Length: 226
Image (cartoon, rainbow, N blue to C red; front, side, top):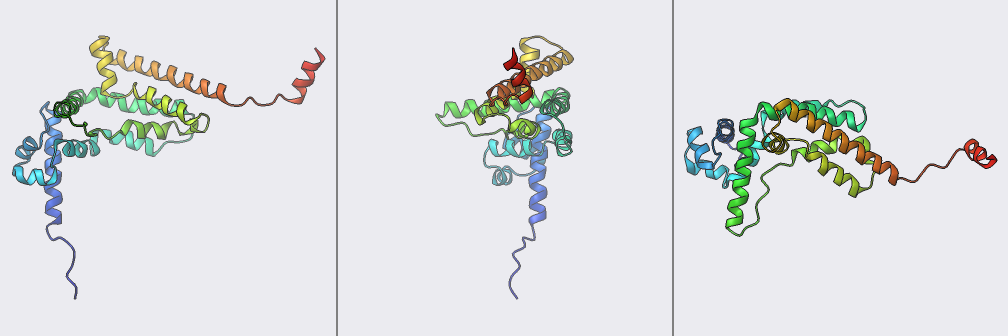
């Protein structure tokens, strides 16, 4: 009989890994720094063990971002999208996601600080900053804007997504609240208005770029008689 390739300690390893990630998530929620060493201490595992699973803070942050339970309502909403135009679908995304951002403001700001710290550390070392953000917003935008995708060239499509990404997430609320001094609901409504304006402008531009439909015979004849 061949030796089974099943790792008898696989379940324990999975539980240890999950404990480290959950510990890092708690540190984020409490305003702490999700370093590997601190997550290990919070999870009550050795640093050596934690570093075997997550050699760098970037690895740990990516894992925390990937399992963020606060994002479950957004994923559920997008998984059950019905037919509709791009604007209605986008507003569903924004109206689901942005209230979560406000409800989770402290951990969201802490995560953003951690991302910036990683960028600055890499810059000081003369290294290229690693990608520590999942790019979740761009994936969501691909989904909700799908009805409009065929109506515009690729360059316009990419530009529209990039513009709308500015109206989602903690980054947007930092501008609204810290720079513009708006209250939570005011900030949310301004971002909603801005998103509608950007989306409508993008769609109108795309329609103008499409070949015009030929006039009907009746209209052509009518024009000819004038």
